[in-house]
Amino acid sequence: MAPMVMKDTISNKLQEAFTPESLQVVDESHLHEGHAGHRPSGETHFRVYIVSAAFKGKSRVDRHRMINSALAAELSGSVHALAIHAQAPGEGGT
Image 1 (cartoon, rainbow, N blue to C red):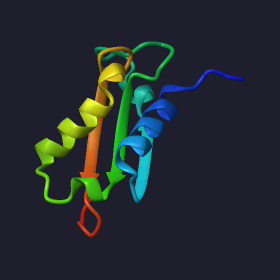
Image 2 (image 1 turned 120 degrees about the vertical axis):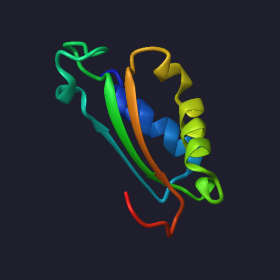
Image 3 (image 1 turned 30 degrees about the vertical axis):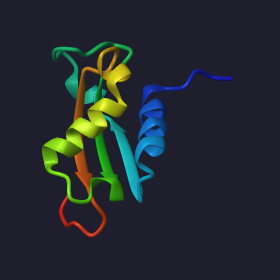
């Protein structure tokens, strides 16, 4: 069995923590070559788009804290940067 890639780990943890209506995790590591935290092996910079009822009534900061908490191990390890777009169902924008 192949080792799980970080994108899958992030997706699985967010799925378990927030049961989202939609979730997209994008590995943007290739866009950060030569920047701080980049490694040739990649898997350092990610962007998350998530829609979950868990975010209803929460501020943007609270939503980010919730996600950062769910991914604490990854953020303290190999993930250098995480861009977050978190919404509750029915909210517009990206």
